[in-house]
Image 1: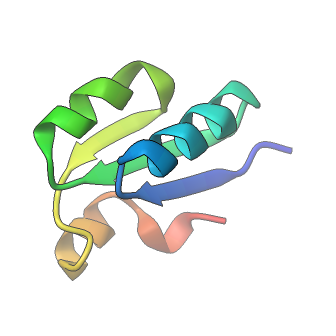
Image 2: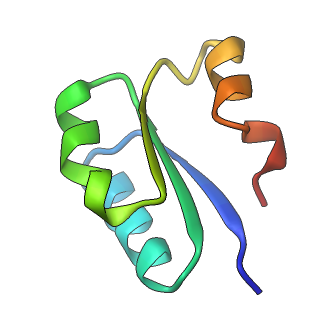
Length: 68
């Protein structure tokens, strides 16, 4: 069964986690406030978004309430 994950912070650990989940066929939303980090993850996730995870509006926009 496919699940939806939100990975916040696309540093070394976040990138690895997002890439592995996506490779397993999961839906992965990557969120980071650094555009360079988002650029590196684009091909390894379902959606990559530049934004501040402390901003409730950003979390709503990426559908955080619908992640598993």
